[in-house]
Length: 156
Picture: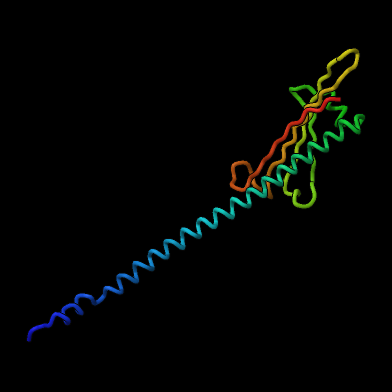
């Protein structure tokens, strides 16, 4: 008995749909894994961006606190210590704990001052540096660690 052309085609095509289905599953699984990786990286980037903004605000809080101490409360311990500080050993203070969303950050403020005489008037220049660092137990070098530092000079 001779095989007809239609019967031969039918036998050669058997199993072709299985290969196609497996190929599609592998491709779709790869695309799904890539999308999951991109989504995870985007979420981590967004979280670090928010933490960086909060660290900036915490550092700014330290600058504003020190500026108030120097300008408004010039007889306070920090301001008078700042006038006596040298560049080798500046006056330092730690602000903690901060409240709200800034609570995870530790803020260190340092200050040193120098004076200059301008037409018989003594002018004090205060160099204030504020550093906000850390997030909920993160240490330097870990992926969740954030640090921001600001420096301001005030003349009075």
